[in-house]
Image 1 (cartoon, helix red, strand yellow):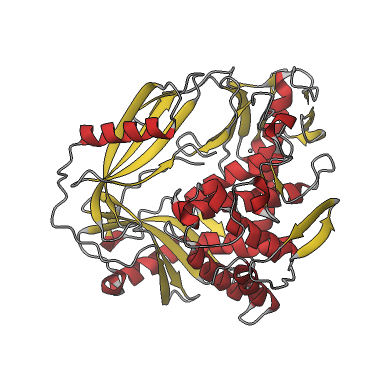
Image 2: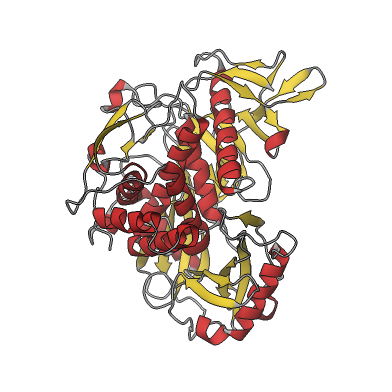
Length: 547
């Protein structure tokens, strides 16, 4: 799970200049434009800026609004997709994001918008004071952690315009943070009406995975390291200087949602470039898993989707292992651009450094840099499902015999005390006792880890199809919600369609119906309308009651 970043805007007239995200390479499209003629990131932004000026009225843009480029996708056939964030009178607009779609010659085609409601407020002065908003958020954090003794509780409100929940309104977005009785971090983001004081929404904001190394879960794996003097460092210069450090079972000190002191992250070093023993007693063993998970996630996104790093800018993240005390969690944090792993309590979970956990958590970073799906309701379920889908695809792509690809989430980290053999099951999500197999109007009321089941089920059906079968030695029996029979199109096509849907068509407010539209648009782009792949996407969504 990733903490949301606040984005500063630039004036509409110069919308193309303030780009902050690097160019992303989309999945291959045909026919391909000649490389010399293909639009660049800069030209795509210039074309989009011109489109914003020409179509400002239809896009609901006014002189009171600013826009900032978040992401750029240029297809191999030259079509361009420029994603923007929006502010209103210098306040961030939740749900103000949109994507401008352009033809290969830069001509405007269409726009995907998180919300289509016009934004106009009589005033941007709150009636509810910031300290009161902070108190309300702290109360919400305590209520969400009932039974826990919280310490070092802090909250800092930020004034925003909420366009996600009905008519646009002034709101306080407050990040409330604390530590539990073991010193582990807990956090909740609370959205409060800045006039009435009513809670609009709330969600957890910590999202709940050449030398060689002997890992805990993946056997002996190859590692790219850095030689410094006579000592090897667990740092990979071939993947953006990604590295892994030891948090020494400490935790972060965060005040007002900003971590002013992070748990120590001492870079792992080794004398002979052979890391770990494969046992938990050797602290380097978990580090091997973490570094390996980062490597495989990096390679998956780069080799399969042309994405150079989590942010698409070639910069590596870093890992912290041995975080906290008996900490049963792992999380991605945008604010440090880092991945953090607990050791587990040894009863329900072992160290949470398994490959699919790494792929899952780091994919939250990819979502944050692209669609930024809001972490609540159906959008939150899609956010979690996106990480489950790509975490699973990372595991398959790694092709590691010691941790073979499957459609089980977190199967390596669970212990007998957990009561089942995986965290989640993509073929039939309800096997975990809580997740939804099928969409209904109440799905958005579930915890996002359970509402994600609908998209996980869709993804399994799209890749493998319905019914009983054995895949890579694991038995599955995936039902459909409408009694249909679905034929799968394979994991590679699932990944290509979902990645394009996420990076080109989904926005922060996308719900399940919107995800169906986004993935159909992606399938149309990649394989054509009426293709077997397009029809399979439609059939798989119908099979989970999304129409």
